[in-house]
Image (tube, rainbow, N blue to C red; front, top):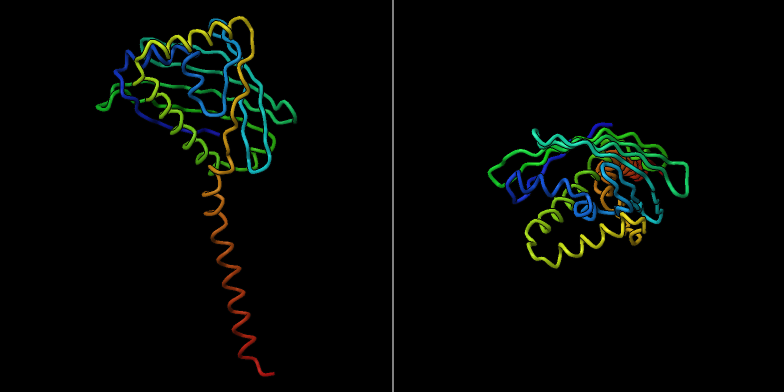
Amino acid sequence: MQLDHSFTVPADPDDAWKLFQDLDRVAPCMPGAVLDTHDGDSFTGRVKVKVGAVQMSYRGEGTVTRDPAARSMLLDLSGSETRGAGTASATVTATLTLDPAGTLVRVRTDLDITGRPAQFGRGIMTEVGDRIVQQFAARLEELLRDAGPAASGVFTTGAAENRQGRLAPEPEAIDLGAAALPVLLRKAAAPAAAVLFAVVVIQALRRRSPR
């Protein structure tokens, strides 16, 4: 499954590129995710998602390859459910270019997922992806606007702890059910309307039929 997204951040491409190379600062901006360890171009982390009353946690690893000249980075990611047989792997390419509003970030994701989330299909996964990217972009914008030294100190401390192999706090689950609900309703609208129409017709025929 291939997903394409884009968003802008209020910074020039050089500053945005420097931020994107700092995984210890960028990773906390991703909803439902936490970075556990980071060593050079390799890292490990966890993702927690929720679909209604069902909650799923993934543990995985990844590598990052950077192309400074093109301001492009490639992430190879793989993971599996901590309690379940589901797996997920993705190749994510992010490219930064100049934009009148700052920097345009284009993200292409080639996703392969098994287990319960795979039942949603492309339409719902695209909708969910759009909402996750919107939250990610909003947090990145907040991070870029926050020039205070206190925030940098917090991130630096967290990065040091991760390099020492200490697990970060448990991530807060992102609710995919809430994100997917509008799509589910749209997909169900036509069948529901057909059923409602049939019920109305049957009731009308019953009223007209002689007793």
